[in-house]
Length: 172
Image (cartoon, rainbow, N blue to C red; front, side):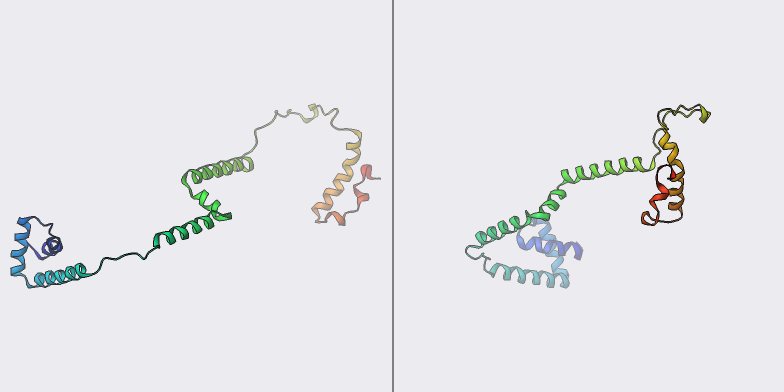
């Protein structure tokens, strides 16, 4: 038996749980090794001190006070934001919130970055498109004033800087 094995068996032998053949091997090793004998003597002394120490006892009313303090803490934790945070930390709700958030992010990504489906195909020649009923006389008259407003906007003028007379229908 080497010293490492003996040190592992010393505590086991002091508690009385070592099988007889291993205990005999330990005794043989301790007869030859002074270092392990010192280690065994130290552990025997420590065990004697532990056995002599009084058994620890909790003061009277400890558990009642503990439970009252625990009830106060639970009541405090169940208010406001703490309750929401605790709820979101539960695995079922946390996974549901994560799944819902990912669905929203994917939907927003598609809405913002993917081109919408193409509408009806345009006619090869724009002159063939029927715009009757869409382009009225008032729309035709307001086109020059819209062009003026667009030019003002491109120049960096804000709404108060643009004269409303320039934008009036028909340029009047």
